[in-house]
Length: 481
Length: 102
Image 1 (tube, rainbow over the protein chains, first blue to last red):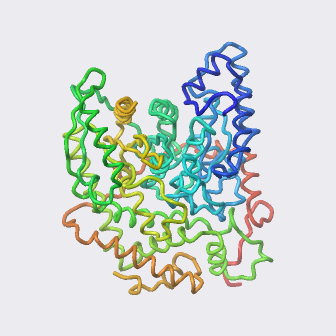
Image 2: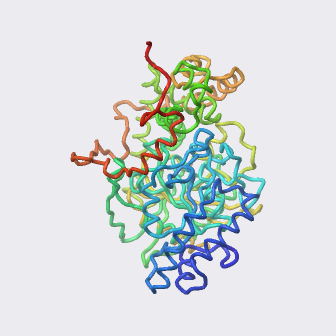
Image 3: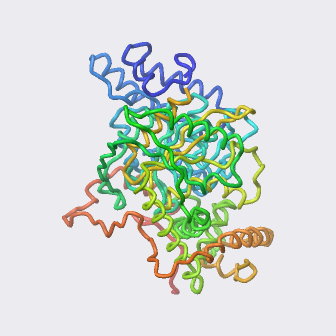
């Protein structure tokens, strides 16, 4: 978008369109040109959708010509993670299994943004089936971090985070099962929101782990995340897990809890120092004329959250990914081509060819955790620990309004640095608890380290209290500016 | 528990995956490490704790029982799009490998 604006927010783009600084069509064309030109190095997009983007941009220009007022997102280009369905376009989920798959309907999210006249410019790269924390698991090559091309952008929504960080688009959508919106947003220096489980429809999101998956926006600032969330939330009769509750979060004063378990061994020193500074400044500031108080709290089961997640998530993965059987869509063979005339061998051939290593690893792990003789020791035990983790949060939210934690243990790591799966899993140690408990959480940039890599803090609130996250998120941005 | 204690071939069979011997070796190592890590859950006292399956406590939300239901929303063009992705079809059916003995 460099021809017009340098890394604009949604709000700034909206103002520019209303002031006729440029037309929506010019904006989309410039945006697409810049991606064509500069994304070769970053690889944040898997596919561009110029026809679709220009169609919606022209509708917005027609409205401008008729002197109609524009909605806040109208004409503002967006990128969409490649596991969210946009009718007639690819939805590969970063997998060879779905390399040639074309979506046959729009996700509810996509229906909503099309209705709001948001031009979709392309589909972004991701770890295969959203399994990973670096996009290195994509079947179509890894994405690079725009702040340092030797480093990962995080994952699994790494393409979406990198596209926003590079300034290709003012916002993008990702999905977050254990941190896949917040962790890449943190590593790329942009804002990432994981909404309360159930508040944003998942119809048309390719399922990974259904008790954890949510869709969330990646934006340049907190105010933009709020705008997008308000546009996409709401119950959907076609998603049986969608749910909405209205909460009043007006308080006498705001109390921010610092859970000590998130600030222990393993946390990067510069992130820790920076968060201390944020805490000091927040404590000295106020929010809407009301006092902000900082207090230490404890969530005793935090240390078990990642282990709990690595039982529940793969179990659900093993069930959800059973649908890829080469029979109706996706990677398949025509009968004559497949020598296997036995159905079991056919399934095995298709699935072994179509899935990458990490996906196979998680399917095997989940199949094991659910298998006869191990179910109680693993899956049931994890579900019980999940209940305890949720209770920890419930107790703490009786005392505090919001929690402030790091988003990740460390800033962006080098491509190829974490070849060991468990080391990679530990990147999500601070983000998985919010998924296990279904809570909303927001990752906000808190500056850069000495190497120039972005650092981030995470705010976690009680269910349906996104409004509180946005207020505190803006306060956090404010004390650092 | 280590991965040497479970039958990887059997689990792979259940998951409909075939593993090359090189894959099997690295998978066994990785799973050993991951299972050793998740085994720390055994330390948690969960006596009397109900397992948490649905985080929202929602229970069987169903649509209104009326004629047509969700089918009304499916456009004819979408049916064609679905069919066009079948690897092999005959008339309006997806053609699959025989699963019953003749």
